[in-house]
Amino acid sequence: MLTREDLQSLKNLNYQLGNLKERRERIASLCTGKAIEYGKEKVQTSCDSRQELLMAMLADIDTEIEKETLKLSKLQKEVLNWSNDFPIFARTIIRLRYIRGLTWEEISEYTAYSDRHVQRIHNDIISQIK
Image 1 (cartoon, rainbow, N blue to C red):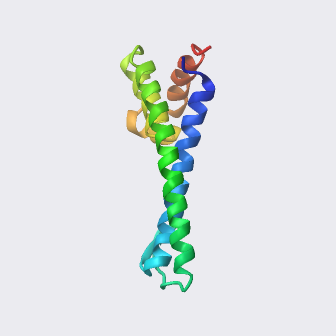
Image 2 (image 1 turned 90 degrees about the vertical axis):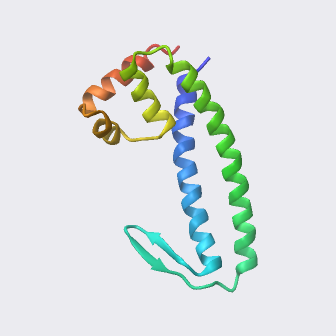
């Protein structure tokens, strides 16, 4: 049975995976000396002399990403199955929030409803969880 903690874990996993992927891209760019996105602009990096250490770090991050992705996938399947019983709009909110990891503002833009309305529907759904 899905719990509130599972939903929070799913949200946290989405955030952690995003951070891991950004970190991986930065380390990979140090290994290859290519341009990376830093904020809203691209910055050129140079090839670093600590390449062996960086490659080991990449391998560790790849392992962590794989592990977290498996956890995320399992929880996403549970949320998909759980949300099937809800009306279409409620199901959309749940899936956008927990499967795609969108913020309230992004969900509001996507659905063309106010943040408050979206959060109210979300809270009604969450209150049904034991």
